[in-house]
Length: 159
Image (cartoon, rainbow, N blue to C red; front, side):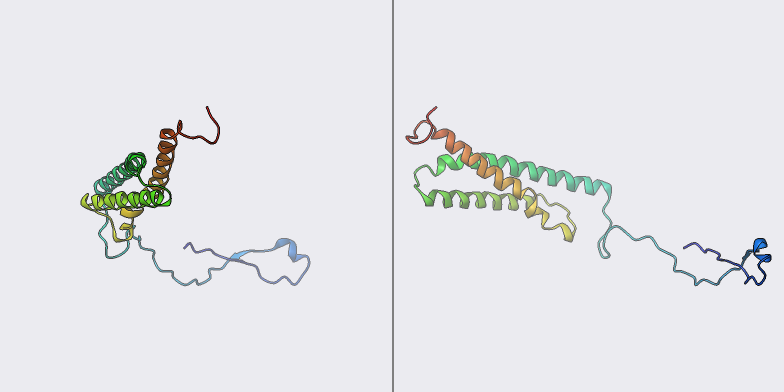
């Protein structure tokens, strides 16, 4: 921190002297502050990550993201045809179970990629693209089911 000097003036007794006010710079003793040391970016106990390792980690996480997006679309479309013989509520639960099995398969594949993640980012293997995976799976499942059963509907709007 910077040391600032306070300006002090002596008390004025005479009103004529107030126009010729003198300001003195009197140094005030300020306590010494601790010198700040640079704080490392990583928490203590973990080695710093180099730029090459970080780009490799980002590349693998990006690959995992797009793998899950592609598998969501493929698995959602496939679920329409795999569970065609199952009727009612069981079809829905079978498809959701299929979605979860495929997702856990991607977690196993991600662990096989041997990403060097710090301990604070270990959950990224599971959480990377989980929202995109679920919504794209459901979207592609609903759209493919609707398109395959479009002509067989007896109720609703006929095109």
